[in-house]
Amino acid sequence: GAVVSQHPSWVICKSGTSVKIECRSLDFQATTMFWYRQFPKQSLMLMATSNEGSKATYEQGVEKDKFLINHASLTLSTLTVTSAHPEDSSFYICSARKLRGSETQYFGPGTRLLVL
Amino acid sequence: GQQLNQSPQSMFIQEGEDVSMNCTSSSIFNTWLWYKQDPGEGPVLLIALYKAGELTSNGRLTAQFGITRKDSFLNISASIPSDVGIYFCAGQAGADSKLTFGKGITLSVRP
Image (cartoon, rainbow over all chains, first blue to last red; front, side, top):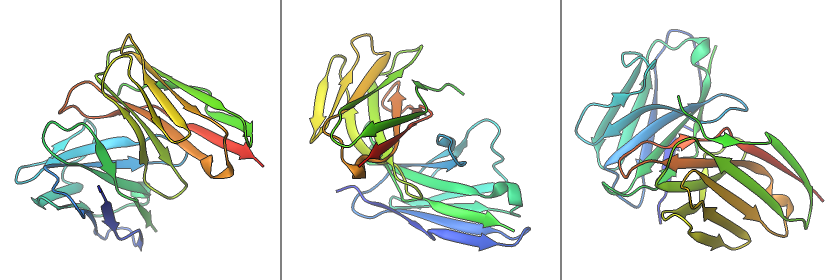
């Protein structure tokens, strides 16, 4: 199997607070995990790529100080949205790739973030 | 960033009908993937294609990796109501490359 979980599945927070989203690969080790965000009726937009034990690589236009990514183990990556604002409200989806050189990404169920 | 071309944005079919979706690119990809996304869920991998010309089936779904490596299609046969959802194609240039996604096609199936 290749199951990826995310926690929480949804979160509502006040503007200015920070929110942490966890992404776990449940039955495999993931050397690489990816974080996407998706706005309604749009495609997935890659935010960053994280490799276990090293710094994340952010896509152009994504603020690394605002979206903190930590990939501390082969089964866990976290995304922290710092000082969240209403425009950060979105659907955040992670994916995990099993082994270096394996193309297939397995996606988590997503986390819906609403910033009031 | 670069995107794959998927059109139309929405498709409406009758239950039992077959449907075909196409995905094209201006550049070459070495891997093509088809995902389905239900509302409020993450994408689920349907079919992965790794070789030009490859034709792969998964139940009622069949996908092909175009010979030019710039396109792929997905066929769904004998559609059923649970086929409703958004179908994304994705391409990958190399083993460690990121995925490039299409904009997705929303499929509606009338009972």
